[in-house]
Each structure stands twice: as C-alpha cells, then as structure tokens.
Length: 118
Image 1 (cartoon, rainbow, N blue to C red):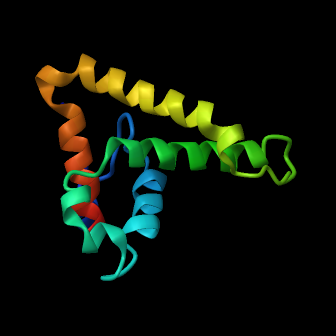
Image 2 (image 1 turned 180 degrees about the horizontal axis):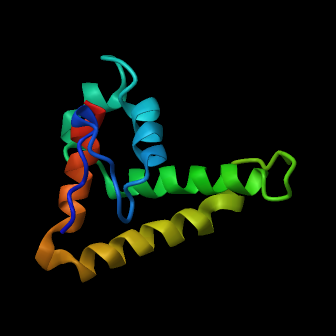
C-alpha cells in the first residue's frame, strides 16, 4: 500500500480518498478547535467514521454540482436531493473496505483522517 502521506513533512497524499479537500473539509467540520465534536468525543471519531467520509464526499459533490454549468447555481443541500448521493458514497466506501480488508486500507485511512484532524 502506498503511504497515506504526511502533511507535517511535506509528503504529498496520493491515492483513493486522499485528496487534500477531504481532510480539509473534515478538519473544518469536526476538528476546528478544542470544543469541536471530533476533539470532544474521541469515542465517536477514533477512527473517523465511514459515514462521515460519505457525508464529506456528498458535500464535495454538491459543491461541484453547483458549478457544473460554469456559473454557480444554488442547489439546496437537503435529504431528499442528496440522500441517494450519500448512500452511494457510503456503499462504495463499504465495498472498498470489504474488497481491501486483508490489507486493512480503510481502517488505516479512517485512523489517519482522525489523527490528522487532531
């Protein structure tokens, strides 16, 4: 398995689910300061939940969709619109975890997302 990268030592991330926007969105959403959920409730974030990654991927996809025409079109981020997108991301993450379980890629990735968030 390729390294998950090390931002402290300027080692770039590469590979599936390792784009810097994912970690940045996770940090802003859950690890912004010492009163944020990821810091206050480590029992729920060690490792980072797969459902949280699916949510972040859904938000990123929604943002891309808003700009798909070249101009920003406001798309309401709500359950009826984005539940299928979220479910698809969650199913793909679960499938990836199952297919790579012998290599423990997903547990390492989720731990890495939490560690970098802290």
